[in-house]
Length: 335
Image (cartoon, rainbow, N blue to C red; front, top):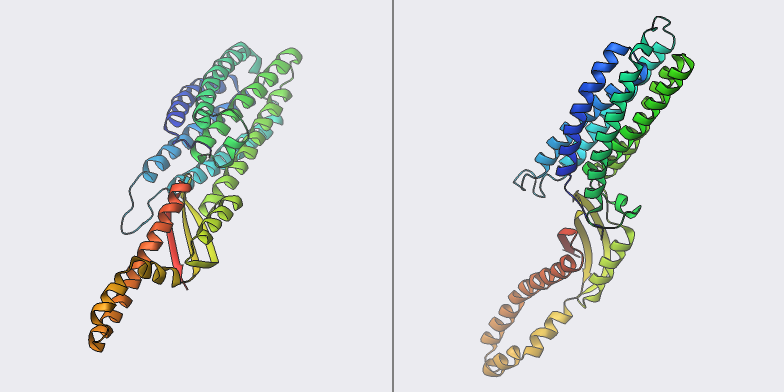
């Protein structure tokens, strides 16, 4: 089972790094008039705002269960991650592409090259800072495991968002550097605008990926099919369960699930357990000639059955939780 992280370290480091990068990019963007630098400053501003939202989600998701939310508030991290992704799409991608297209047809931007050296220096600084925060996020995402595609499958969307955002940031910086280099070599500002448009599309693509990822959790992400089959097999191993007629699962937090199942119950094994203990035989021998006492014994025995059923269900739930640590809550209904 992949190691899951909480995202605090990666979000905080990314927030600090992006705040610094946003400031220096914005200053150069204002003085240079560069479309690609404007795109990068908006990109970093969107990341900074989004990481603030991710911190809100992390804090709210850690609240304990209460009467209103009996399974806790873990789902809030998915909601705020979704809001963050929408922020990337609308604040980052739309604004960036619009401004870059506008600058593409603006012939008045003739002073860009005056600040080209400063632009390149700032982009190099941004590349270093965002590269460092990306490495921190990847390390937290891995959680001590080897880097592979498996760590992305059920990853914490908060940490994953930081990894994707920082990856897009690094890629965006490289695009902006390329645009600046082409503009410097050719003296044509069109490359600067094209660079800004590409950065905007990178942001849009990133946002769509994150929206899809969080959408799965918000609408009710279920356990993997193979895990579901293993749990059903474990249920059927108990002699009291003849058939599993319904099985549902839903994520309530990162790698934490609630399952609900309806089973066909066979009470004979419980009666056999009572019989094998010898208690009934001993009591029956004492009262077998007294019908009234025998009737009371039957009522007493019948009263024991619900408790025995409850105890057996508790044992089944315990076995499931021990074998599948990601299952936090088990609801078994008997037909």
